[in-house]
Image (spheres, rainbow, N blue to C red):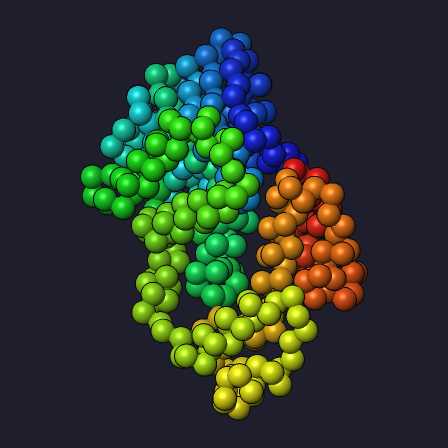
Length: 325
């Protein structure tokens, strides 16, 4: 099974269908590429892999009629032609795509994408784990089912989606400047913004839950406890401290925190600490940091348990995360 490419600068051209298939498999996941022009493509891909959520933003063209079949991408491939057209068959429906209407190829679905030879398009690839992680933060509970989007992204009917694509286009126009402009410092915020705005703007099977969540307002004592957990995450924190801070019974604190965040305060603390460890491991400035020291600094006193909890949270070990730099 191919792993997603960790290469940051993605600029490739080829006449070979085999090369195009292999490259795009490392960018957006496993798929089948069919074309009669196996040695006469005019394939071009120009883009960038962002470092925090491992999203890929780019422009792609094949220069020939191609058909792409997917079933388990492990990512979401989102595209908008700026020339030509493409067609997606999924769930018994056909969706047509041109400069006025983009497409989302969701993970975990059987679908066929036909791309015309004159099609040149913007493409955004979001790894499944990255999208699930951001969605979990928004709905404040684990994601138990794959996210399935409405495949049709009609810009004329949805000004938020039109603005989303305009943002992508502007980024790609300036990507050479962004690459050397503190990429590690702003990547997390930008990637989270793109994923959140997509989830909130494009209808999907979690949209109703997201709408409900937007109307929830956590009580002040829950907010105090959550802020305390974040501000003192480097320190040892006990349930007695949180009980005293909240000013309510332990059972009420647990029940209410569980209601708003679908986890206990201490589980929330553990997940926050793991996220901070991962953030440091994905920053090039911390290439040589000791993983064990990092774990201890963030309150993990049992290294074996830390490694297992990290793998459960992110699907890889801490050393695997660092090796991708």
